[in-house]
Image (cartoon, rainbow, N blue to C red; front, side, top):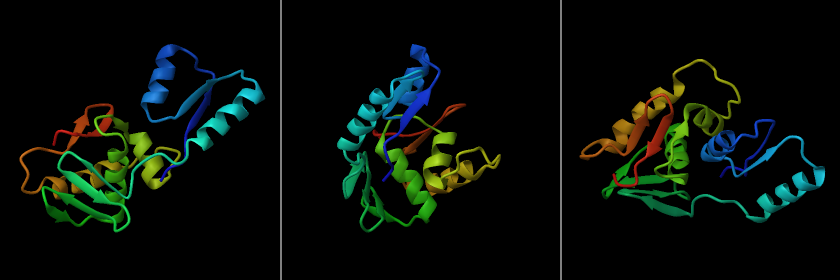
Length: 154
């Protein structure tokens, strides 16, 4: 499960805030700020507890069991490699919301930089092949130039 994300930035325009929060951040604080406010926001984020998925969850026809690390779609068990599973779990945290390549690199591979590889695309392709085998609808949608999202209606 990922920790809460608080963005500290000098970018204070509404569009920047919306983009930051829409990209998965839990809170957004613009510089300059008072240390008391920063402490209060960190305290509020920590009181929320760990957000995310229950031991088992479903999105459309996809079900995952986080304890056993098993995935099912339309009643069929799907065997995933560890990174494929982590990709799916990240997408299931916010169905129908786009996750950028950079977000996936950070959350799944823990890269805080762009390694200039197609690692996300390669793993996403394998995940899609496994999830969509025998199914009519693609469970993952590519949003060109932005990222990927899990379709709750698939």
